[in-house]
Structure formats: C-alpha cells, structure tokens
Length: 354
Image (cartoon, rainbow, N blue to C red; front, side):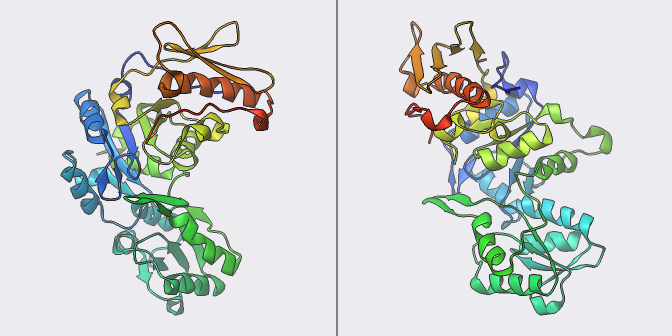
C-alpha cells in the first residue's frame, strides 16, 4: 500500500516533542548558515519542541559544532549535538570487547569516543588492530586509505561512520565519506560490516537515549521528527526506524528525486526550509476523478505518464508552489506503485528550493 504525504492542522512543533535535525544542508553549509534555519528553530522551540542536532560528519567535537550554531544566534547545550563519531563508538563497543584495538581513520573526536567507550585507538595497521573505523575528515590522505587497506588485509574488521557520497560545503557539493570508502573497498574487495550513520536509524535511536535523563524519559519514536535534506540517508533512516520525517529543500534533494522516490525514501512532510516546523502542513487528498489536490493546486498522472498541473481559483503558478509539488508527488508515487512506466513520465520543471 502506498504511503502518501501527511498533513497537520497544528504545526509539527506542537505535535512532536523532539526534532532530530540534520546539520549539513539543513542548518548550515560548511561555515555558512542555511537561510531561515535559525528562525525556524527559534519558532519551533517557542512552541515547545526540543532540538537535537544529528550529523553524519564525525570530524568535529560536539562543542565546536555547538559553538558554530550559537554563532548563528541559536541557544543550545553541547550535549544536543550527536555526531556519527559518538554513535560509531557506541556501535563498535557492541561488536568488540573492552580494550579492543581499533585503527581510527578519522579525527581526534572519533579517537576520543573510542577511548570513552573502553577501546584503544591505534594509528597504523602494524599496531595489530582488531577493527578499523573509517570516517571523513579534512586531512584524510592516501596514507590513511593505505593503512585501512593493510589492516583489512591483515584480518581487521571493517566499519564506517557513514556512507554519504557527498558533503554540502560553502562552494558546493564535495566528496563525502561514502566516496572515500570506495578506494578501500576496491583495493580489498571488502565492504564495511556496519555503518553508524544514516541511513541506519541508529543515529536517531541513540539521540533519543542520549538526550534522556533517565531510561523512563526516553521519548517514543512517534514523538520524534527527523528532519533532513537527503532522501537516501536522512529520510531512509527515519523510515527504517519507524519515524515520521520532514524533508527540507535547502540541501541535496531536488524535486525530480522527490517525485520519483521509491517508498523507502519518501518523507512524511515537505517544507522549503526549517520554518516548516512551525507551520501547519497541508494534507494532500485524492478526489474521485483521480486528481490529487493540495491547497490551491492539483496534479494528475495519466496512464501514459503525462503529468498535468493546474491551479484552482486563487492559486499561483504551480511550478513555484510547494503545494503543487506535494500533490504531484502523491500522484506520481501512486502511479509508480501501481506499476506505471516511470521512463515515460514528463516531470514538471519545478523552480522551488535552494
């Protein structure tokens, strides 16, 4: 059964108690803030929503990330920042005994987390590591990748913090950790056993636990809302973990990928930016004529894959209206799940998002 976008009469910030915010492409791009992010977070917090800042980036200490966010005018504690280094070290400890030697291809933050979780970080394959954890960090070099390959060839178990292929930066999209895994995979023929970052749901699950003051206070999944800009990591992780989710159009995802997303990548809500946390979400609905409606916009997909958009009286240009994207997404998802020929689709050229 197709799962479509949901709507809310109240703002999501009134319905969900905790937002699990991705950082790169959602709150910032490198050193620069994302437009309207701080405004949206402030509004949501005023409505009672708490923020957790979750990132697949394992290169920086949480206090450094928190200081950057405070520089954007946000109010938060260091403990609200959950990095994939934190999650990865906790993941490794479940696989490895206390005192296990781990070759760390990553930053000092990742090394510290390995120590905190009772393991010993080492620098070289010759140090007889039982496992290797690979993460992106700015100083990553060929020597690092070579040491990873040597350790794997010597029998070390292979893990990674995340598999993001790209990383939003000030100048555009840069290679992410997933891209940096490929040389090691090609050299050794080995895939990582497990990944701590999204699209695994561990990032969200660990954040709920880490932000609770006691076991009894861990929030249920249905009270938490992951928010991200990537379908294949942020949204898939939410779906794997049974969470509702919100996709914002300030980072990686663009309308063509949203409209043609397979079920595992489909979000619960769409918003242009984080202001959507404090705004009601319109509910798309299908009429008897097979036309999908959302706000003042409609969308229909014919059997031959032709997509028709139309604004109702008072509606604006559909190609510049997020409600038209919402209606169109539901219409195409239904068409796709009913076996429609996706190659025949004439996707609308929406001009919405960053």
